[in-house]
Amino acid sequence: MSSEPCYAPRMRASFVALLALAACAREPVLTSRPADAPRSLVIRNVRVFDAPHATVLDGPRDVVVRGGRIAGVSPPGVPAPGLREIDGAGGTLLPGLIDIHAHTGTSPDPPGKVTLPDIPGNLAAFLYAGVTTVLDLGSLTPDVFRERAKVAEGKELGPHLYAAGPMFTAPGGHPAEILRATLPWYLRWYVVPKATREVATPDAARAAVAALLPERPDVLKIAVDTGTDDVPRLSLEAIKAITEAGHEAGVRTMAHIGNSVEAADAIRGGVDALAHAPWREEITDEAVAVIAAAQKPVVVTIAIGDLLEGPRKDFLPIERQVASPKLIDALMAPSSFGGEAGERFRRAVVAGHEARRRNVTKLRAAGITILAGSDACNPGDLPGAGLHLELTRLVEAGMPPGEALRAATWENARFLAGGGADFGEVAEGKRADLVLVEGDPVADIADLGRIKQVILDGAVLERHPRPGS
Image 1 (tube, rainbow, N blue to C red):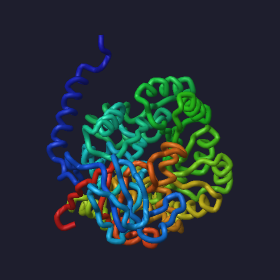
Image 2: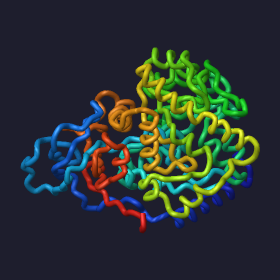
Image 3: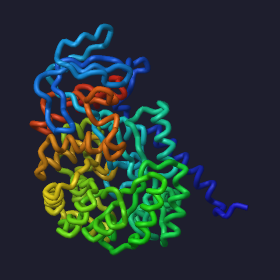
Image 4: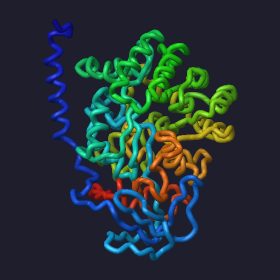
């Protein structure tokens, strides 16, 4: 006999109805793939971004693609009979961008506004912005794994999708405490157990990992963040239990952290990467030393902090292309996270503004690998365009544009798929996920948004700009 409340089936039906209504209200599709799109072509007269070396190859090149793979990068004039030709007109060809920290199952609407996500719209926006691979670092489970399968099977158009599933946290820890405080009752009961795994002991942690493994998570995501209200966080023993259970199954772990102590504890607990440099303080020399000694990368995510500080004042051109005018207007208006707790959070984010930039300098000086992730689709953080904003902020923090682009391509690919990754580089044998832009983003990162073509698995996608964008 079922132990669920008698109203649960009715609530589930109501929730499905809400999702159906949301689907009917979706924005126009930003990106499509023609049904007969060939996967072989030649792109002529382009400068090629050399991702491993963070520079542009000397002189123009022709890049030949056959069957969705790069067949050659050659001097101009290479014979390619029968292939579709694209004139690069001296623009720059880059590997498809990789966002290693996103949440495809959420919405970038302003904080405090409850909006059901448009997941196909989010995926289309990533592609529109040239993001051809995404790691979803926390979404409803098992929903995100079903979405991953639909994309992989060609049933839905989207970037190559990796997924962590739920976030492991302490009972009442981040993000469970935020979800319970901000979601209305008719969503709270459904979302919290699908978005999180609240574990109190190492044994409970190992059992929760074992229960998730049949879904084949690409990474495990844990939260080690006491926030501004001293919420519960995972113990070092629980962190070790999760990472060890994951490693035994060949699955790595990424940890969301908020301060230096949490960063060091996560590394000592065996995690494989940090999601966020401390967002509310300057990282300590001790924490930097712990991370550097372990040789673990950090996804610093500067831009999301800026976006949560208050109303937006300006937008990149690519952001205005991805977001509707209505959403732009909403993000420029004052909003509230709700209550004193929300305002304490906002004040902490504002206070950490400069520290987040100094953290980039300190991590780079210590030789720590920086990965590029946007944390989209959090409030104001637009899918696809958010990675452009993150790269802009990294450059403003002192990272050379070529290094930022390498982080968003080659470095991210190596973290996701190892040294033999077949994407993240414009080189023979690699997957033909490519972005053609006007100008030279190694000289000016703003040129990254001047996209002319996006190519996914060798197929040229059709991008549909919003009227007036």
